[in-house]
Amino acid sequence: MGTTVREFVEFWLENSVHADEQFGPRRGRADIQELADRLIRFGAGQGYTKQQIEAEIGDVYEYIRASIDRQNTDEAVRRKEEPE
Image 1: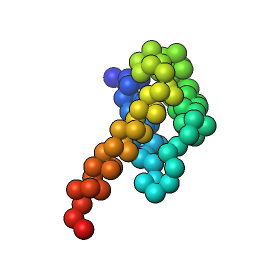
Image 2: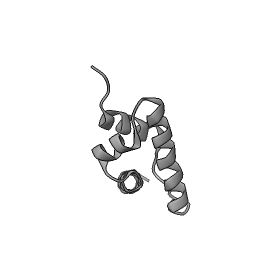
Image 3: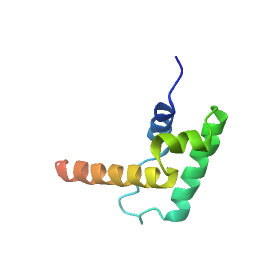
Image 4: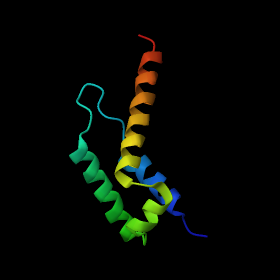
């Protein structure tokens, strides 16, 4: 059995999208759009259309933005919990 669209997206996000640098600015719209475009291009190479991806996860841009925001929150919590 092959990989599902969601499995593909989650794998791509895990390997391609990481928390923003804690001491730098939050990524802007252009940066997120570039990631969304890359996901769509890579998905096409794996046989997934933009429509299939968006049917599974909704708007690609918003999904990536939410993923980065979650990672930023997780990283901030992790840093607070680190012993000094």
